[in-house]
Amino acid sequence: MPQKKIFIQEVGIRDGIQGEPALVPTERKIKWAAELLDSGLDVIQLGSFVKADKVPQMADTEELFRHFSALPGKEKFSALVLNMKGLERGLKCGVGTFCMGSSASETHSRENAGMGVDEAAGHIAEVAREALKAGKKVQALVQSAFGCGYEGPVPAEKVLTIVKKYLEAGVRNIGLADTAGHAHPLQVRELFGAVAELDPAAELSCHFHNAYALGLANCCYALEAGVTYFESSLGGLGGCPFTKLPSGNVCTEDLVHTFQRMGLRKDIKLETLIAVARDAAAFFNRELPGSVMKSGSIVDFKGTL
Image (cartoon, rainbow, N blue to C red):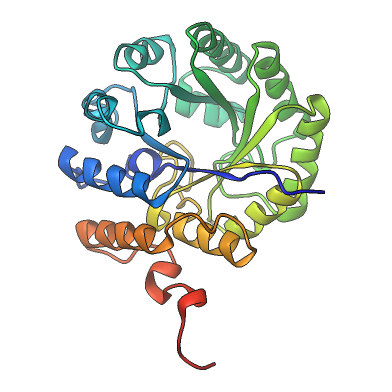
């Protein structure tokens, strides 16, 4: 069976830095975004439309979209929205792809969205409908799909109930997010298989965190299960600040390196990604979780074992 094309969405400029105490200047975000675009990644998530006093790192999201709206490649930028107000703001500044989601965990849903699971999922379904009516691309995620830092295991039935609401709203890019980092490979294969049974034509996407060092393994099993959209963050930055134990995202350079060793996505400029990750490490003045940024690509390694 031929391998479908893999798409990678870089979320470092949004998810990666949202909880960082050191504010990243707009000029530095523009620099990183331009370099990530040049690397050949498919989508770069520029920010989210949230209250600046709640998430100060996202205060310049409109400015970022307006900057890139006049440049080639503007269709490759996405934004996260949480509600109708965020959608309205995104439409005004030219966002083409909207990412959104709700949690399958009651506690996490209330921490993150201020409402219960059913209400939050219904709300996101309505936001998705409006975005689709406006002719925009939509990706809808189920957060805490594989477990919750507050509640522990999350029943698959709760996840699939939310997926059905997204599908009924007309969304065809459906994602599962491992917000707490609890997923393991066999669970990944089984749950994505169940989602695919609901709509075999749906595009599947994944967002894994690396709390227990299983992020890349989970990505590989997701690939095997038919997932074609992968979210990752430069240097492994990030983690949901509204979960009990925030943990970094799957590292973009490590994910691309893994795929390239498997013969996939060799068009992406890995060295460009490594350079951006090293620049981020220098900016935050600390070592980031990514491995390939430290070791370099094994494909280019000239030493002896």
